[in-house]
Image (cartoon, rainbow over all chains, first blue to last red):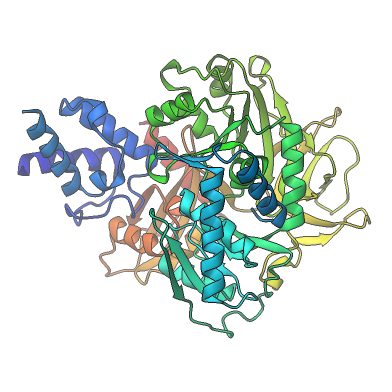
Length: 85
Length: 492
């Protein structure tokens, strides 16, 4: 799980927080309320998860609560992979 | 909704076509009979509560059939209703309800159960705000202010009736139409795609708030319900044209709120083979003012906003405030048969709602839009006279965002610039210098922004540093340089 969380943290930092000081980016930080990820950003995340973790796009509901924080995204991927296994 | 004629029309639809669909939401049909029954129940419940009719009700604008029934019931019972976005922060909502002197907040759940809470009165905070007359204006919309305090815009009942009549005639709408309601219920667009649709007896398909960027879902909604009328910002059309989707049932496609990019426009003909296309221009204060019929196959670089609607007068004023005759570029002053009588806050109206610049009898609205007119009388939107840009279709004042960032105690200075973006129209970038000795980070500043700004106004990128902002010769932050450096950085 921690590797997965690190991967997702890396993805979020590269894609959405390019060049910003992210030393205080926790796994609970609200990415949506804070404007880091907007509605178009959600679409990008879904597309990334689908490719990187072999989750069929049809199985990814575009609901903000799954993508609200790094922890939430990691939990979502974890669950999706477990469901598929 | 905002008129008693609408209520009468709904009652007639419920009598003559009780089983016709009024609303479709999350796959559930609400018939005219059910909608009117529920609205009557709500009106009766409000009568029992016996709230002060000289004070508006506050109903958060959740886009559900039950909320729409509640609004209709409230109009029927003689109340004006303030319908702000449910997404606004609690502090902002409280300010709005106090300013409008609302008596109570009402919500309704999926099963039609009504909940109400009293709103505390604060006459001092409402000083300078007009009282709402529920006999002339039933609906109070708010502008999409970029800071915490949107302006309250009463929508006159007569103004709405005139608007509905114009829209029905212009777009040849009938009770056989099915309209897609894409924008949030608190947006002025709902005056056409929800309220005019219901007044007419047509079917309205409500796009759920949490599915607005789900291309597959939108495509399925349009196909399954054989939608004939679509209205929205360019992003809606981007989503509806993904994967070469085709929508043969759509007869009317209106784009509004933002400039339609040419490559997207060029795709519309194939995606909507049976549709006529219209670029519609307006704002909450005046409702629609300009219309341009568009042929996607013959689209130029920039889609005109077209010509003033019937009954609309549009004047362009040059830098000296002189009314331009014939072709030229100037600030748009406009008067429409659909416009509000003014913001609720009296002092906001000064210099904005003004006497006709050419001496006519009407009240004109000063738009702040820079518009060009060519020799044929076709108008094009060039930009703004102030610091406003559109972020995802929502008017946003860059300077107000700057002011909010500057209120953080660790911020020494902040500059916000708007960067053109193919998806969003514009994205905001903030460059901030922190006070010496503080450990301010961009994430902390984002959390601060989230508490004080609506979502669309939170900068997409935030750069926090210790070096002072670059300055122009006159000592102001050099926004052009900041913009140029950021854009260069993104290309690298």
